[in-house]
Length: 204
Image (cartoon, rainbow, N blue to C red):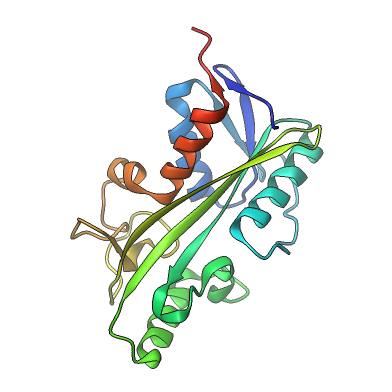
């Protein structure tokens, strides 16, 4: 098992996505845990060769933990569209082309959904979080949030596919929501809550 987390710890977030790193920093702040980005430590990004969100999260966390000598957290997440048999899934970023342009990625999701002829616009975000120690141990936690696709995109907040996803029970997209509300609802939060229940030790 990966090591315990406690107040005062510093962990590496194994991502070069500053939006994602910022979200994690906000989630960990109330627990007194500081986050460093892989980019700030000049860590390279390993090739994502896994066949699932969990496998990719684990290999990224283990690579960052080994390279930094610190506890490392990695996220692998993406949009799964029912009418597209779960695509783009683990290839979520790749749908944006070589530059990972999510404007292009969202347009492709809409184009392929329309081409499918399906009436069901159901979709979900899935997040796998892996916490790895330099000793090579790791744990993985998964969370999901369900909702509906919309087009055209709405909202300039968030990142990735947020502007085309409306979570169940709400009228705003993740791209329109106040960040605090999105954080409470998100797939990332659901995985994060599992992570903290399992690994966080409150020594106060």
